[in-house]
Image (cartoon, rainbow, N blue to C red):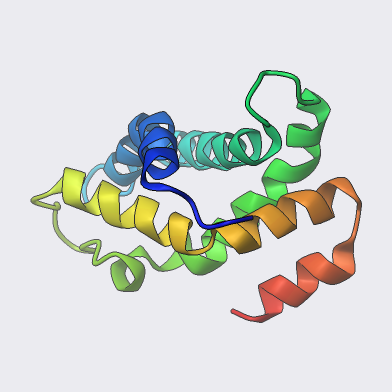
Length: 139
């Protein structure tokens, strides 16, 4: 995948923003909500798969999203969601002051790893576990 343009980043950030903010809220100290956290993490993963698989129209195979979202979900856990305090400065024991700023940082971590995410999506569809495990082992 070529580097995302500013327009593509804006579009993808817009698609994911609601789920990212709700994910952050669900992880907030004193408001932990495992059900919503899981739902939003899955939604973010599926948005990424759809974005990668869509080639300018709606003509992609939805079963490919079903084949790939879990691999993306697990990768996001490795690079971001399992260590948000380090990855984006998410406060562990207090409520954040700036959800918008944290949401931008969250999206930026994803953008920094889009090439790997694209490889993972395509590897999952091809059932190429060697490639998937090679990328995951880097982290």
